[in-house]
Length: 190
Image 1 (cartoon, one colour):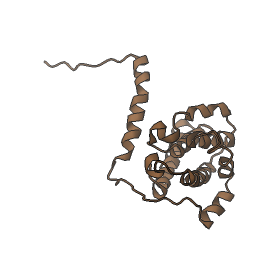
Image 2 (cartoon, helix red, strand yellow):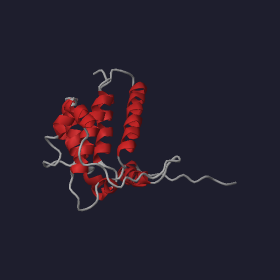
Image 3 (cartoon, one colour):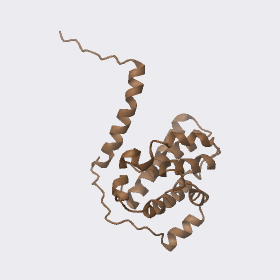
Image 4 (tube, helix red, strand yellow):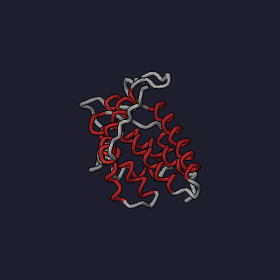
């Protein structure tokens, strides 16, 4: 008879290793998954088009982003902070995003992308519905944000902004992302 051996991992060890699993999955996000091709964009625009500028001018989140991005706050921190302000959450929660700036400090998954997903999670948490429905609401918006993002820019920070270049491309992308996040969460009812 064969006995199946189970590995028991104490809760503390499991929780401390969870960050490694999350980081690993984010690092692998740049590889093709479910038939998706690696995205390459040789030169992302630095300046907003007239249409993009009009959309940003209508977005309170995008206008607020200008107060933080590049002024002591990383991409992830500035995005999360405007979401916290919009959702009337404690601003000290911005520290949650401290390690996500600069592509998780390793030029991997863009902080504007990760913080945008965090904002949608916070918005879902305020919904007056059962948890399964709120999670579905969140999933739909995260899927929409991801789909939108991948039509705008690569997922990896290193592919968005080449080393040694200025942050204009990041500013443009952050403003567009803030506007998109506002559009996606505007339908929630707190």
